[in-house]
Image (spheres, rainbow, N blue to C red):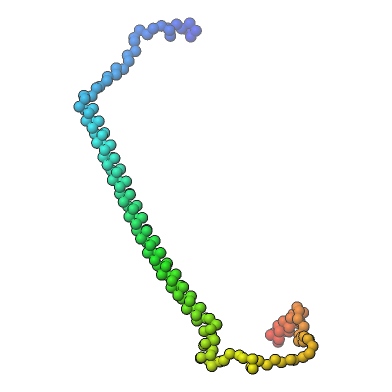
Amino acid sequence: MRSAAYDLSQFAPDREPKRQPRVEVVRQPREVAFRKKLLRLRMRCAFLVALTFLLMFVTVNSRTELNETTADIQRKSGELVDLQSEYIYLNYQLESLVSLRTAEEYAKNELGLIKLDQSQIEYVNLQDSNSIETSDKVSGFMPFARYLFSAVIEMFS
């Protein structure tokens, strides 16, 4: 029976040394490294050229859109000016048709009416005292309710 407290074999050196894996460094010849570097450089150049063309396309496209939008704005501004002048013209025509002078001319020429003068005015004096006469009708809810009730009874009889 062995006791773990007296087991000194754990501290004894191993009889067989552990083998370390051997790392081999493979060096590329200069020509292969140069070709890879050249390939990376060409890829960067191709990417930059593609990016440049993309930016040029976007710039040209945005300028085209800007020009079209500016032309639309100018065209709509011209239409607005035309419509405003037409509005002013039509408003003037409306005012001329509805003016008091036009109404007087129409009444005089078409209807044969003449302007009122002082010889045509006659004043009438009705009474010497101020008085108000009212009708005998009594207003309020009760007379209305009686009228409504009598109308309903007449409907059913």
